Length: 345
Image (cartoon, rainbow, N blue to C red; front, top):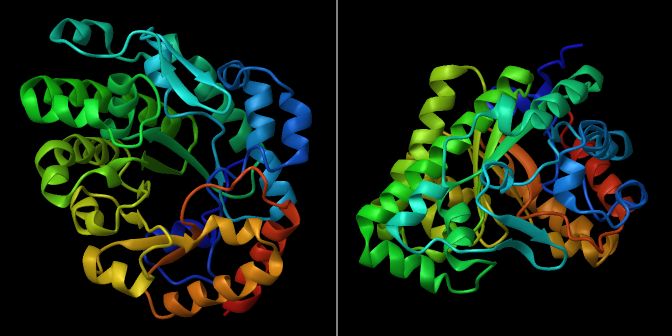
């Protein structure tokens, strides 16, 4: 079964919609009791490598919430881990690298991704999900800066000191590093699209550690390469670009070539539009902590987002970052109903 276009894809393309589409980053995950029951305490990479489990996890929030899109249950580190760089995902920590990237010799450790050999389980998961979905599936990849920051730092960082130092001191080596990561992302995204994903999102979660000048000088070209490759391969597939703390980068992110730019909760949507220009749709931007605080806190903030989005030439309602594990699923279900009811044409 092929999922219908629906309002989500229309909004991505800045076309008229029947009602504002809504989905949540990390909607498939730790906030759902059915997810915890299925996953248990196993390693997340093992779950991702099990297509039937990964597909079920992808489908769970669609069934529970009635969201307008599913996002593949996977991880931005899958390509680099699948090609043998030495990455694990530690619970409560995140990606941890056995031997961080430091010298030109480490480039040899980043080889091209061959999806059908290195990570065939990703495409298999996509095929299972698309066969059962009634809404579009979003495939995704990590952006070069964010993935590179894990490889260089060795684990999540607050200041990206090692990453930015390498970027400043050895710009030629940096360029080679992020170009190889971009090529892996391209290979992964195209395989997901060929398997049935109908939109893609590039997560540059930590690009907010850069100023706009550094983003344009050191990062933008590699991200633009990803979006251009997707457009060449699948011209009709919407491309979403997301980051956190990226209010000052929204214009530069739009320049990289996405159809949709994600906005976190720090920048009002009308202000974001003045920075991106009106050639892109906007996605966002409710503070995820509001949902943790309960419905009484969530409702007025959600209505404020909807009010700010009125008249925009394309809006997908989402959180400004991922669903937090302590979020009550009932709050998210009520939020979906609110968005759909308040924006129905």
